[in-house]
Length: 134
Image (tube, rainbow, N blue to C red; front, side, top):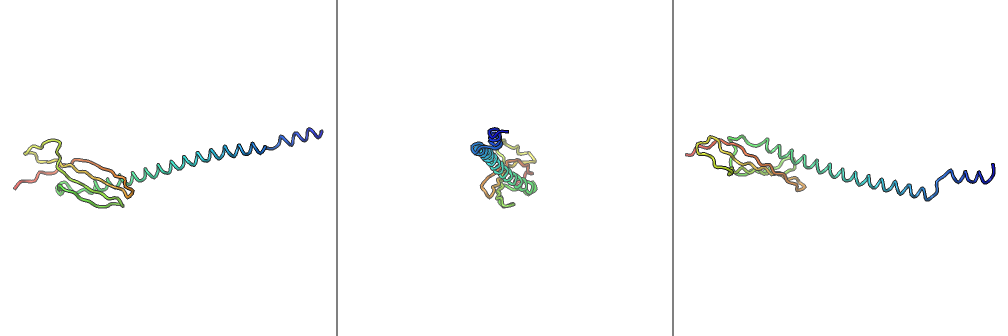
């Protein structure tokens, strides 16, 4: 084997400095893209968790609503699991109710606000027994 042949083999065995720098740059760009994607995923998961907590608090307020015989027009406020809530009971005005009807619709609006400021509003209609006029 000649000197020239062994010199060429040694040159072909390793990477040049330029090849190593290019490979590191490609890896750095890929890691930056993965990091950005992970950050977006974490923010999305936190947002979903906050929304679920807000919906669960609203559901708990709706479930804890007084019985229809005890529900009165007006508003009630409170706090549940760190979320402030307000329930407004108002006359339902979409259509007139006949005087002979045993049940009167009432509009119930529940607003729940998270500590971060996000708000959820649920609107429903509850039938209440008509009160006898004195």
